[in-house]
Image (tube, rainbow, N blue to C red; front, side, top):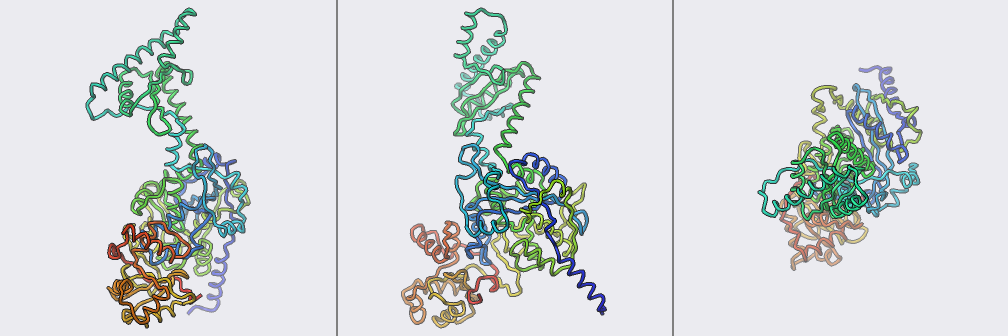
Length: 624
């Protein structure tokens, strides 16, 4: 048995490890004024680090409307749809990035950055956004934490997604060098042959004219040459002669590029796009020599890179993270990843499988810390990073030493964007508590520990099986009284008397019909709507049939006369797909039913999927 002295010593150590002061934590604040220099720094830090923690602040969240949040009764599909609507409605104002490496089980080196963002239309193209939604409660919360809205608006870094960058380049009409084109698999037609020979003759004549223009000529010949240049479409590009050839189709572009290969190495073709995305012309530049052509190619590549940086803005950081292929540490994978995809990659796909496929091409490994905590039993409910860190420090003895190099000289005293640094600290502590090695080998196979690999790319926050794919629609919660059920056993109820508790509604239902003589559960989703779970197969369908029939009697008739309404889980699924995000769930379900009457989209027997039901994880207003 441990002595009193040993117990006191253990308690003292525990109390010491719970005191985690962030007053000395420094995060480099990045705005438009120091973005370019910071970009070079973070590029080095990302390259030398093993993990990259991210955290974001946006103009609103789904937390103000309970049922908009991902709930235990959500399938993978509905959970993704909920996260998607939040990502599309609100705007990013802050993006914290913290590359870090774990040197041993209790030490890590971090390089935290906090980027202020603002969707400024710097190119006058209406991108990245004309407008976005804000929630007053979210903005007030950010203001209380000291967020500088003036700096955000006036000095925030703009950005374009990859899809928007492609559109911007087309609208700006920037020409790009076109190297040897792929040979067409289809044989040339007579029209193709005539077109190629006509253009070939035109290019030869233009080239000879350019070569002879260096010789001494009279004034009359100079005038004639000038007129000839206008007629032939001659021009100058970067002090070099060029010829613009208008085209009517992409086929003609391909034929011209293939033909240019037959000439010597002093031709450099440039494709000039229209604002609609098609090719307007092919510009052929005549270089003085092969060396001059290579010099021009490097010059154009450098200009294209500089213009690309201006267009991409903060997305340069996202591209660096993507190119590194390093594991990304997130607090809420589904919310963070839908936000990153919608703002920096492309509009979100309608299907979760397409989303996962698209995201994993850019970020092959995303590790969800909240999921890691729940599945390991470290913490059942993870509200936010700060609460999670406080809980871990209070309940577990796992000292961690953190090093932030050069923080006194290069890092300002402002502590905005601390959550990414907190996430790095929390991840390292969790690995220490769970006896998981987060150390990535310096050479050879840089794979994560198998225990961590199991927690990557979990895009369904309530999933039960760690290895399940995104197409598996099971949902799980982490409590002892979880029961596995099928979505067909769930029905949604609304229209009951105001002020009813879950217990009162359950008693009223039990007394209303023989269907409720067996085991069933009632829980509120919000104040307007409740969920009824039938534990005996087939009763949910029987109940809906009774409600839709003409033979309603007894206590159930009285409830219906008071306004009671019911629908199956498929209505809820359809409601999410249609984007009916009203404040009250009852109102959204009503609109979904109205749509179903005209479109016939809802079939309560269409899709079967299982969830894991737990009373403790659904809102019960009777307990408030």
